[in-house]
Image (cartoon, rainbow, N blue to C red; front, side, top):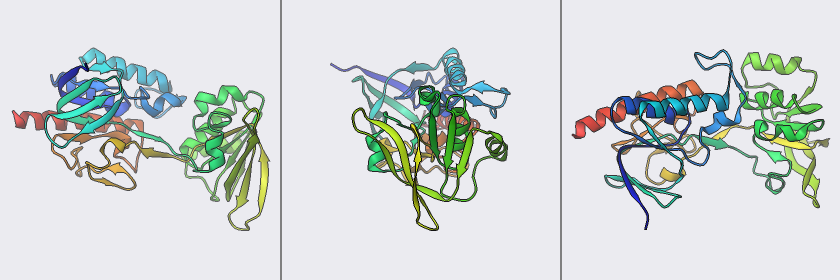
Length: 313
């Protein structure tokens, strides 16, 4: 028989938004319950140096998230290791089903499920996932010591991944479909000064190449977007860094979404299209997508939830 647990405020997700909501909700005496999800700590657990979070000149992403979790717990937020697989927002109390079998009921909900890495969508890419294709350099870079790798993308994530991989690989080739990068200038400067990195402009990836037995990446076939000319780049690792998609599957048919799946909130707040349901962080933010803005929205969500719950009482 499954357990049922009730809480005033259920927080779903454990990135900067979720943990900050936990801190503020606990201080508001809401006795919040936070369900961590599949990846406790969120995307920051797959990054290395974080240099733009206030209070830390430099901190490792996983370390920052451990500190946030410890802070939330210290304030009185209950943190549960579970994965919400179903969420019913049709009436109150809201109901959520955990992978553990536990059913959670709540008077209010804060959604902070974040975003997930995007892939190119190539059959060959899918074939070699885990066998040379990765979306996380900090997770898998160690396996490419003394080897050559490619990174696909042109934003902050791609540049950070390329720079990190130079700690292991003998050569890193960054492949971008445009003729300029979208990343911060300070990151670009580091990239262009690194002798291990080569940038190939105006090319898209057509296919990931590799061996069958055992499965493994040996190269990638790329195409010039202007001339259509194709060529092959030899590599042992293929890292995709083209951004992220909001993890809104739980509420896709219940809340109003926009901009390709981001949860829409009322301007200047974290209120969603259903009263008592609030959303924060990368799940809602298609513009800034920073740890500090996610944390700020987590604070807003907790305060919005506290005010709404007070009104209900």
